[in-house]
Image (tube, rainbow, N blue to C red; front, side, top):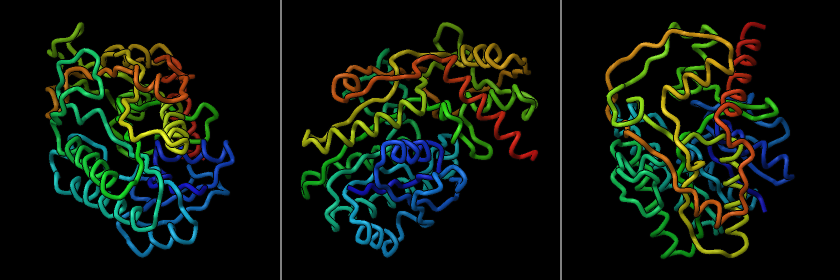
Length: 329
């Protein structure tokens, strides 16, 4: 079985690529390197530089490597950007995924793992979000991902494609072995930004909104370590290979941390203080998103190994230090 990993040179995708290599799984990476980084890819893994909507390229990969499963990470992920340029998100996340799914069906790919998001729920009032919670995305990013979920449902019913949709809550951290991490320039992930501020690479950290109806007034999120997240993908693929039915699964730890919780943890773990400035809320930011993880834990053979905010921050901070050392070398 050869696996196609789209976006496999990106933040989450590169962790998936390393996990595949660690488990001696045959895989091909397809990445256009618009945000991905070739240096994050395992050296002996096959990398094709290209777009997921480039039909001749994708068809050649599917045919030549006899691809039996696709793990689809490629796409855009920044909520505020999606509000500013929504059509870019419907093109890159929705339309291009439609092309990829159609080619998967055409070439008899058996299994499809899709990187979705908790943004499909919007500003839910559920204290723990289940997979059945109302879908009311507040941004084009969330809508663009939900549309792909619908396409997979319909393609599965019509063509027999089997799929697992994994809805991420907030992904953070880095490879515990230091092989890869969040390397995107101008990234907006809170923990990465806070680590950059701790290292003096940003003059300050902005907190967007302090009047949310939460304990300290800031947003609350369920942060999951990227290594645990990609292991959920690996287990989801094994689940489908064993003949189990299509599934949609939330990926988090079931525990929330506020923006101020994260800031305090980064300061404590790093040993550095840094300026924090309070600014207005951003459009599209829900008050709280925390996963009900009962389905994740009962459906997949998944046991988290990094379920601790300080551990997650430590791995992210160590990666940021490594990035600084490589850029100054």
